[in-house]
Image (cartoon, rainbow, N blue to C red; front, top):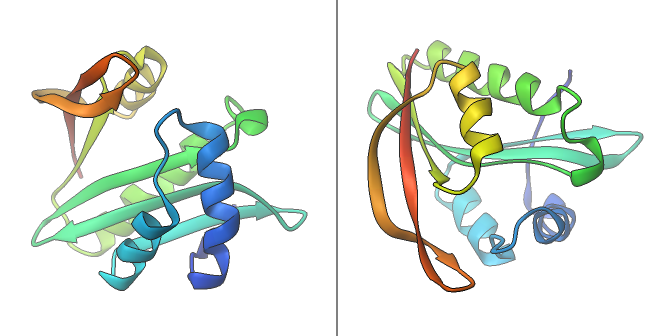
Length: 145
């Protein structure tokens, strides 16, 4: 797989895809702010169509996976696995010792996905995510790199 750095010109397509993928999507401003902050942002295109993307923030010796997404029609086809492998390899090469992430406590498919990559639960953030009925907890997961 050939992952490309995300840039400002990609943000309209990334934001449109994000809105199709998530109930509470990141905004164009969220992605823009991540690029301005220097977070690593990557995407995958096939036939010039955006199919997957991710944003990772580095802090000292930890990589924090802020967003990883695959368009609905391409989920469960190995793109997420390939992208996460790529991100973990980049973090390792940059000297990161572990990767952290938050996932909705109700998102059992994502939790199982991360567990297959040896992520383990290390905590919870109460009321972290917006939800249709209020707020939802996040499970904090970590993987040693």
